[in-house]
Length: 455
Image (tube, rainbow, N blue to C red; front, side, top):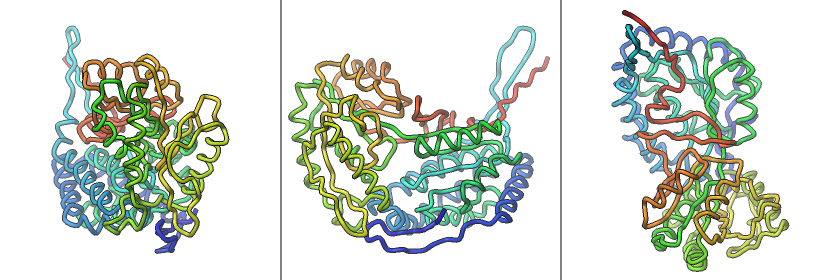
């Protein structure tokens, strides 16, 4: 596994990092375990203060950290800055609320007293993706650091500078060695760490394939795991929706981060009364997007993260069209060159017999479906092996809430795009994974929820 930072805009190699040797793996495990033992005797308040320093470091150097994202995975510079800000918000949330979220929970039982305390369990192995290189890592590190669990990071091989920068922020804040370590490990070394008794949890955000492999290793070694995997998120437009808002949000939800987000709007399920106007609306806005250098303020659509990602998506689109789908808007001609540009597209007619029907198209490709009523919309939404997020647009919020209760996903947003917020749980069902990140649920995922009885 080569850890290479390659600029997706022009294909130029920025820097390559050497793979970890086995001695580094052992040192990482040793330092993590030592932090785990020391943290058991440290007040949570001390870790809250240190985590706030991490947030302050990143907040004071937003442009520095953002530029690394643009260069490593092609994120628009403004979007990269937004990611840094959100990463700071996640850290600040747990720095402010971590201790209170971990307070003992009392339980009432006859003729007795009981409470549950939330204790640390050991090192957490975090296997994280390239599409949000800081946010995803902070979602694991911040709550576990507050608990007293060290985090060992195996990041995506195409964002090594981002992985190093995150560790740099940790060290600048004065957090002790062992609390967090980025390691350029191969999967054999990752499996070795998962099997080690000093590692007691595994958190992965990534593809279904990666999730299956890592979850298998965790299960084989009886380690708790959380999986945040792919999605085919629906964007449902009911017949009474505010069309202008739905169109604007649809474009943001599909083209943000070049469409490379697990919770991106991917399947647009539109009532037949608004279908034509909706398609015209998003087509007009897609046409205004400008591909280019993500560091150029004039660029409004970023390249994809890598040449291989571009080529994979191109193959998926071609297979969808060969399988009977129709290209409604856009130029499906592959963009040649060493960069990873991809023209935005709108396709329709993906039926259940199409090879791409229940596949995640991870890029700027919108799939639109016409339905006659709410019942058909829900049936189509649930006809998927995935269940991460989704959105519903309707002026009748109660109607939308009722439909949301019938959609088989971990999250649903009403009249807004699906975003992660530190205060609420994030995660999915079915092949989109299990477990929750963020909020009170996220901080308790990797704790020993110990019951204590007394009279």
